[in-house]
Length: 51
Image (cartoon, rainbow, N blue to C red; front, side, top):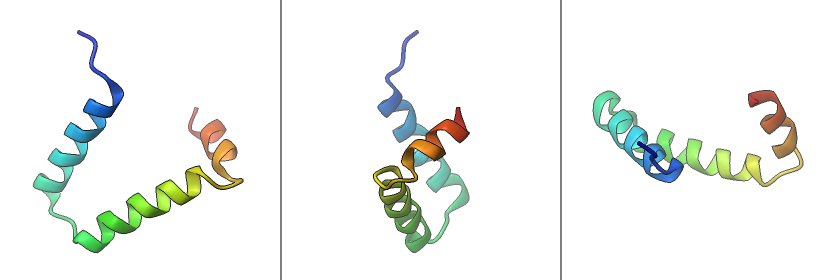
């Protein structure tokens, strides 16, 4: 069964928020921080580190 990555990320994110109930400011901070980090000069370094 092939599941698109975007669908898997949405499902895991939804379940994580429902089960752990983090503060909404923390969720927003992680989303904005991840977006900004991915589009900065550190993006390739983080990508290489994760892989």
